[in-house]
Image (cartoon, one colour):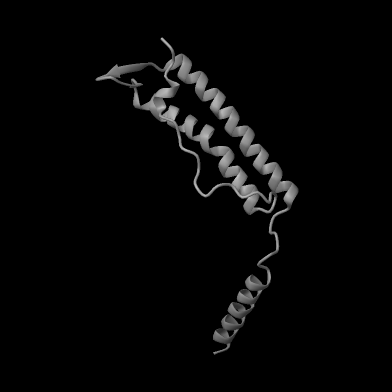
Length: 123
């Protein structure tokens, strides 16, 4: 019986604590901002390096008037690069907004990702 009362009291205190701290920031704003800046920089570097790999290692082919990468690996890399380019700023801006670092809310829907053939190296 004592254990049950103890658990009930802990559950009530945890609930009150959660409700009472609704508007309290859990993370230090400077640290969170630095983390988001790192994510942006790492993403940019990944895109730059990925594009270099595509330029030197990948080829595209046209089959039945559809141009695309010759290997699934190059297509997957192109998809990753284009997704990062199109959406990373959207997501980090949303993280800034949700983290209280910005008052500007990004749009509800993320930007579209271009087709992978847009990264096909010029022949």
